Length: 94
Image (tube, one colour):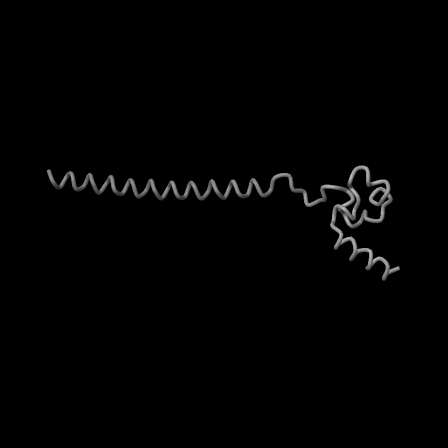
């Protein structure tokens, strides 16, 4: 009788170990799926505002006074440092 309960205990121990491993695997896969889903949501590689794109920085709708009412001026969207560097490059290239 002691032999049977020993086998039963071994079977239960193996089952617990298997379940623990499956839970870890399931949690890891769920975390991976969540990370992939969250990081790829609504990203198309573009710009939020048209005036953030360097191609549009010279358009009249991306420069004052037109853009000041909406707050979408290129200089405001990209930051003063980037805008100053762009202006210096623009002056050098003519």
